Length: 393
Ligand SMILES: Cc1ncc(COP(=O)(O)O)c(C=O)c1O
Image 1: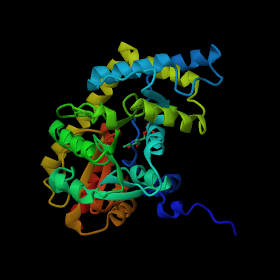
Image 2: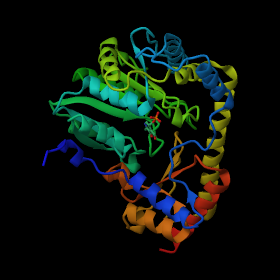
Image 3: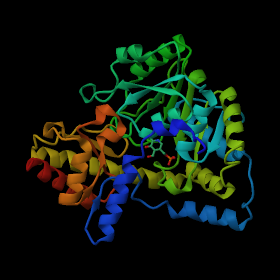
């Protein structure tokens, strides 16, 4: 029999997908399930964005487009990064339009990694950050980001994890699943460490506009950072456009040249009519207002959970207020039960869909991820059910 790529044996099937399948099966058999497992805004894409895409299709933008992306879109990305993050990028050479944030991350890693390179990834973190590095024949070293330190690695953990083969550090702030983000000072120290050892920093900032405390600093924004930082972002979470598959990578020109080759030889280009809709989304003032309202809704639901947690006073479910993104990473370590078992039981016994913390790494064991990208009613009912279930264990 022919052999296949053995790197894939190192990757587990997504626990999130397995859970989603189980939930679908339960729903199909008539069960009433509160789905708090998804990482997808519960809002529709603003209709004006849809109109722009339809019009672009009717106008004939249904053929190949430039692989880098249209210049007007790259220019609006550069303006956004300048305005929101205080970092200036040349739209001609330092930005490429991608098929969502996940593809931006893929292009970033493919552009810088050589087989056998070590990649430092915090634990817990979104599984794709590790899986992608493994698929590209990198070697992932997990850096503990314990709850007791606000889900940010102790600085000496980076020093301990570093090896002469380390090529890159992967960051994702605000984090999926914890919502945490570090201070500007911490990022400066990490960038200085990366500079000393000639490392790349790949920073996934897809939740960058969703924050509830002081605005997070972009990893590219601190002194000396831009030349070693690959910034991953997309319109998925911030504009409720997950299905459109549009994002971008901003990085030094020589990295973008590699990313361009990788893009041309895989997807060719992002659909031109989608690029037009993305330009409109990033620049139209009324759309910024709509997305502001979505952020207000997430903030209200976050407050709702914090209020309920105060009211219910559970010793079993510890709530750590997320600083950003749209998840709670609930601490149920008091139950001394595996995260997967907890999620299965909560689904089967009280009908709430969640994601097990262990899907994000060893440090996530004992935690469950609950989304607030769901209606206020579902968030409240779901959280009450989780607490009631935990109290009975
Ligand atoms: C941390 C993180 N990065 C990237 C993505 C993917 O984003 P996109 O839809 O832009 O590919 C997700 C989706 O859940 C995510 O949680």
